[in-house]
Length: 66
Image (cartoon, rainbow, N blue to C red; front, top):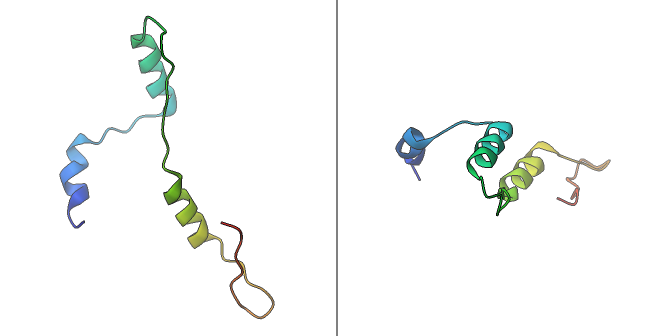
């Protein structure tokens, strides 16, 4: 979608895993629930496929199992 990142840029907040977990655990006084984080693996798989190019002796692309 063209222009999407321009629209959501104002809400962007860059933080480290350490800062995220520290902030959460300090505010969670009851300790009733741990911190759960979801990661979308599909973009990492896509990037790995684009980055890793395996070829056989004939120059044909070989499936690397990704």
